[in-house]
Image (cartoon, rainbow, N blue to C red; front, side, top):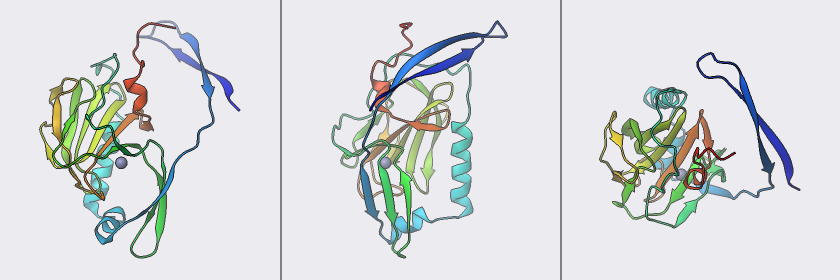
Length: 216
Ligand SMILES: [Zn+2]
């Protein structure tokens, strides 16, 4: 059963008087995919790694993702997919159970979309933006994070090689690296994720008509 809802937006610009409007939306029923992943020794070790190095990497990424820079307005028109590959091996918000070699397991949500693509395939920026992270990480391998709008970031994981560095301004479709299976991966793929005010949101939304076109 669908539920009709309204989202009330209250805002003001530079101390001017408070404005508000309501956005209607519909809450629809959705079934999510559930999958159990049997992790090998190496992947189990990554997922259960509590080293200072990994903790520092998580802290650094969260610090970036919680940053809302008001002047970071790079693109307000629909985004592109980050790869020509169309084969998706995991979907946004899949329910996951990670099974470790020690018999224990944890559950989690899959925060992005996985594209199954051969090692060395081009990975491109989904929109104009500023590269705010470009480095290798324990869990996500060679990784890039791009800032597109205040609080809106795209993330690209498990690459074999990067073609950008922190501070670069990239254009939509610009090659930022090549796919791989670095970090926690069971084979070559691209993990593409979008974060808005820290929350993982469905990347497909941004390739649709999400633009601030002035339509109400
Ligand atoms: Zn993934």
